[in-house]
Length: 303
Image 1 (cartoon, rainbow, N blue to C red):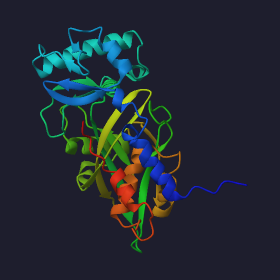
Image 2: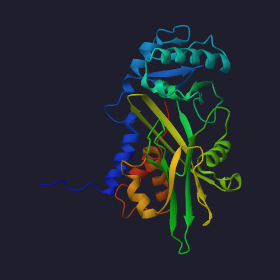
Image 3: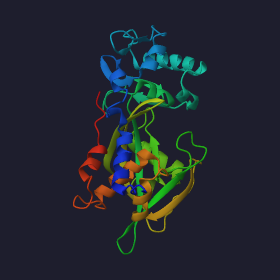
Image 4: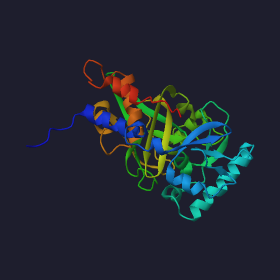
């Protein structure tokens, strides 16, 4: 007997469970060590990473069930430089696959987004320490004459180091060191989609989407600052820096169907799912997993 087709709701729930896998039974969470800097837990270090860091005792203390940055490194600059030296050594030794994607782009490390940064770390290495990463994602949409919404969807370049060729939000990018969320929004809009600042600044902050997953490259606690940007009818995004190969303007029914497919970048699909909920394309009377979807989009990034 043929298996019953998997419903849209089940696919959506499966998507969220995958992106919150660090908190599911059977994850490595119980084996990971807290990553502590200046007395604050800022991440989770998988056991295989702990073993490597133990070789660098002048930088990392790995006793007592945690990984602590040496208290002798008393400033942001000292911590950043010491960690960078270790990471470059591990990269040279080809210890971890994620370091092959070295970007020369730094993310700031802190317990909460609103806290003072404790150090800067190479973006490709952040999963080794399970430190929180933040990004900006933009839902670009147009309102048709009949009131119906259509959404701009991007297809990622085949040369992207992660998720090449998959569908994505119109604009998305990580918040790099010394850069505000507003600056990231304007920068990514111009670079990826040639959206001028006068239009980009019309984007409205509407939500955050937060989750923590793990894979063979480490632990990924991430939070995306979500913006909605209603663009004029006569405006279309254009390919900018080459990170996108095409843009499509699709009706919401098509966007809804494709977001639960393997064709959509998973965390970006969460951002679209959040859009569907906020704009009442899903209703608690007809969506059986309505509460589970809401909760799954907004998991705390706690220790």
